[in-house]
Length: 134
Image 1 (cartoon, helix red, strand yellow):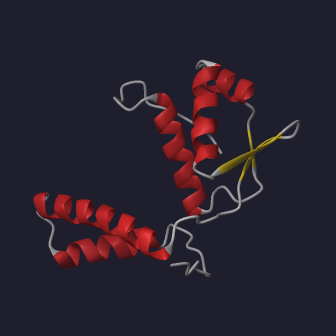
Image 2 (cartoon, one colour):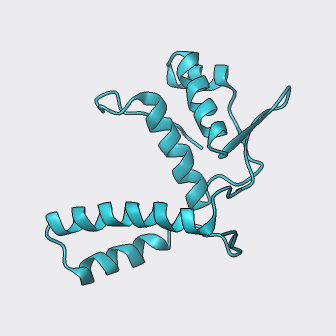
């Protein structure tokens, strides 16, 4: 995976990197068990402070996207859902509401939005088994 960041963006570098890793995992470009560059290596490649990379990895580890194995490196973690199905649905409903509000304000029709979602959904990898914990 090639990491990059936009120096003109108002989004902090660590946040841009977090978003890139999450997107790569969601799209199947990074798979569970894939190794990421070390903090030192990635900070050299991107010419950023190692603390920025450490913060990126720490945040991703905290949310369960990455796992650090002492002496071996940083790896993409196996997906785990600790939230109940109800909590996951509520969280997603909130995000969908924000998307729909934005689509309305941008002047999209429901059909246009459905077409865009259908086109984009093919770019992502969804789990085939759901965690039905309540």
